[in-house]
Every structure is written in structure tokens, then in C-alpha cells.
Length: 371
Ligand SMILES: NC(=O)c1ccc[n+]([C@@H]2O[C@H](COP(=O)([O-])OP(=O)(O)OC[C@H]3O[C@@H](n4cnc5c(N)ncnc54)[C@H](O)[C@@H]3O)[C@@H](O)[C@H]2O)c1
Ligand SMILES: O=C(O)C(=O)C[C@@H](O)[C@H](O)[C@H](O)COP(=O)(O)O
Ligand SMILES: [Zn+2]
Image (cartoon, rainbow, N blue to C red):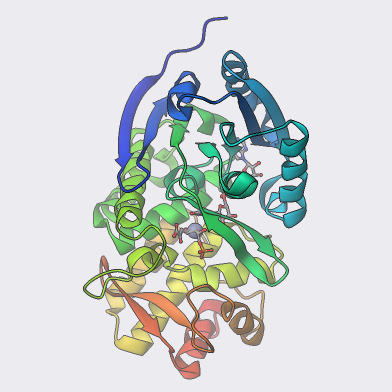
């Protein structure tokens, strides 16, 4: 059977100790063997179970080169559990996976997080290539090597840093992505605009949001710019130990996430991650306005940019006490002290440690619509 040949290909290189390529383009499956590298005999294809039709062409390419073990995973956030990871480990064990074998993930960020974690932990680490199928996973989850699962106490509390051997961002896979999932991915895109690349905001502000379709040139540019923001950050601080000259380092990618993760947990993951990030970014802008005088216009710009693309900017589904307790287990916390990534100005991120309860409550009141 003839395979479609890759089209419209651009390669974004990730440097560092374990360099790899993020390939953006169309019909990219034929590139998988190149990214997996030599010596691989068996490949486990871990895919979001509902995406069998998208996974089949990838499985077909893999089957021409390797023994393939295809494992369909539960949908979305339900796959990010220790029990699903355990099922994968058992399957790899039964199939006799060795250190020269590899994992390919195919799905949204939940799938790349879970599959990346399985690859990071099996035999203490085997090769993994991600094939993200959502905007969010292309611009964020599949790049940079953060993998993980949730626990009862909260989001991503167990995980590992495990860089992929490559990432295939095949934008033709976005054709079937529901509109609300595409929009959720724009939450991380707009976040990148505020923390590092204001041109992203300019594109969002001058483009008719309805024109941001899976095959538009504007979406392609937003995707590539956001991937570049992520690459630039992780190359400097892969393991989130901290930045230089007051820059938060990799923690900057957590802009808006302290509140976002608390909302996701409080709603049993009913609110999508990208939606929660939009709400969390507006929350933290309101916090920064109170705690350190962030400019009113920049706070307003948060609200208008996220809502322009169809994302929520408020949330009233949980009490202050519940969200405050959930934020305490955020990985940026130190002891009893909450730490937030805030902006001092556009694309000038800093860490705010230990904001007052008064300021936190005031930002919460705005978020729920009380102020
Ligand atoms: N590791 C990281 O650096 C990182 C970064 C950002 C987000 N994340 C994680 O990513 C997850 C969110 O990822 P997400 O927004 O991609 O959600 P998701 O993986 O839950 O996917 C959303 C939904 O879209 C469906 N879907 C995916 N691709 C599709 C396609 N092409 N066509 C039709 N349906 C499709 C999925 O089956 C699912 O129902 C969260 O768990 C978040 O914590 C991780
Ligand atoms: O890659 C990173 O670093 C990020 O923080 C990217 C975030 O968008 C992403 O949601 C990540 O999973 C959050 O990580 P966590 O360490 O806060 O769990
Ligand atoms: Zn995120």
C-alpha cells in the first residue's frame, strides 16, 4: 500500500542534552521510523481509544517496520491514572518490551502525558515519539518532556521529565477535532502570547476567530509560534530548577495554572484544561493588579483576548476555601507558601511568592463575578 507523502513540512529543533525535532506539517506518519531511530524492534502504540480511525494509518506505517502492540486508552483525563499506567506496564511486560523497544503516543495531551509517563517509567525509560492530535497537545503537552498522571489530591502530582525522541505535529489530524477542543487549545496559545510572544496576541486580535480553523494559515502560525515559545523555555530550564535575571524559568509555562488546576480538580475535570488556563490567567492578572500594580489595560487585555477566541474568563463553581486548599498542593508551592507566575508587564514574567489572603480573595471575587 502506498503511504501519503509528508507535505508542508517545517522542522523546529529542540536543543539540549537530548536533542530532537518537532515536525509540523501534513500526512507525516511516514516519518515515524526516522524519528524512532535505529535498533527498535517492538513499538507500543498508546492511543486515545476513541481515535481508532486516526491511529490506523499510523499503526499501518509502524507495522511495516516493527512488531506493533496497539493499546487503546480511556478517553481524556480518565486515562491519567495509576490504574491505566499499570495496565500499560502489564501489557508491555507480557509482550516482552526491552530497552531497545519504543512507545508511540497518539491523542490529546492526556494521552501524551500518560503515554509519556509509561515510557519514562518502563525499565526506567524507553524511547517515545508523540503524535499529538489536539491543538493543545501540539503546542504544549507533546513538547518539553513533562509527563504525568493525576492522584486523588490533584492534577499531575506523579510524573517524570522524559524527553521524546521526536514529535509529529500532523495538522491534518485536527480535521476531526471538535470546535470546543480546538478553542481549548487556544488557551495555551494565548498564554504564550502574554508570557513571551506578543505577536501571538496581535494575530488573535486581528483575526476573525471563526477563521481560526484547523487548516487556516493563521492557526498554523499560532501553533508554530507557541511551540517555539515552549522550546525556548524548556531548552533553558528543562527540569524547572529556575531561570536567570528574575525570569521564572520553566515555571513561566505554568502561567494561570495554579488556579486552573484547582478548578479542574474541583469540577472533577469537567472544565477542559485549556478553558481552566484561560480563567486562571485572568485570575492571576487580577491578583497581580492588586499585589503589584499590574497595569489595568493589560489586565483587560487578558479578558478580551481569551474571550475573543471563545474561552471563559470567570468561574463560580467552587468556594474560595476549596480552591485555596487545592492550590496549596501546586508544585510551585514551597511549604505553606503559594507561589504564582505573574506579569510585571507584557512578556515580562516574574514569580510572586506568598500573596496576601486579602489579595487572593479579591481576585477570587472578580473571578466569580462578585466584584
Ligand atoms: N505535559 C505537558 O507539558 C502538558 C502541557 C499542557 C497540557 N497538558 C495536559 O494535557 C491534557 C489536556 O490535553 P487536551 O486538551 O489535548 O485534552 P485531551 O487529551 O483530554 O483530549 C480532549 C478530547 O479530544 C478528543 N480528541 C483528541 N484529538 C482528537 C481529534 N483529532 N479528533 C477528534 N477528537 C479528538 C479526545 O479523545 C478527548 O475526548 C491535560 O491533562 C493537561 O494537564 C500537559
Ligand atoms: O511544560 C510545562 O512546564 C508546563 O507547565 C506546561 C503546562 O501548560 C502544562 O499544563 C503542564 O502539564 C503543567 O505542569 P505541572 O507541573 O503544573 O503539573
Ligand atoms: Zn497547561
